[in-house]
Image (cartoon, rainbow, N blue to C red):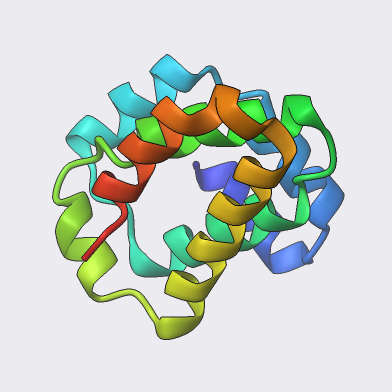
Length: 118
């Protein structure tokens, strides 16, 4: 995730979404099991994910990615300190996933809503 921090500074959204998509979902879980997701990192990830939701595949990836991220150490605490803009972004992401994937997303969305509710 150090590379992601560097990309954040460059403000290159295309590179950031490509970077995130290239991380295996299982690796996200393993990395953040040992380390908390910092509020700044969560904000940047949410912004990047929201901007990267353009296809069905993007929405499927985003739902899996966000489920894995929510399994991070002390995620609930990080989420409780998140900005209102992040909470609004989460709602937009979930809405986009639901609109794009429809019924096939219901199970994952239900899980996401539980994990991302403060």
